[in-house]
Length: 180
Image (spheres, rainbow, N blue to C red):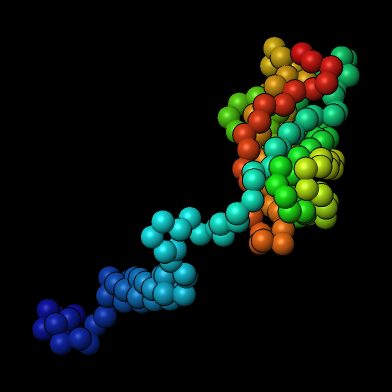
């Protein structure tokens, strides 16, 4: 095929086809991105996106209830772990614990993937309430501390109250009740 025929558009060739496909994909992707950005609500200046509720912050404690027997202390693999979540309502309004999300941070005796459970625990003003939660943890490698060693968790608790919904985030260290 001559150079003149190529320039006249009679011969597309593989590079021309790939270029058209690439441009089409890029245009469609850009369109989706623009639509997604246009449909999301941007927070106002000074607004973190969460509602501000005028209540005293509750006191939150997370305690590990389960432990692994001494014979299986240095195993690897899946491990069910039970926690007790205790909340003290320091406000003058009743609150309801509606959801708890747990996830391990950094290295520890085991890993907790992001896990969330719904609850409906009503806590009267100046009172304490608690609930328990099982999580499917994983021991990726055997360590000196074993499966009963310490773990750092991020606990995100969601609440409802007469003044509105709110959440509290705590970073806590937990360990087996039997210790290391």
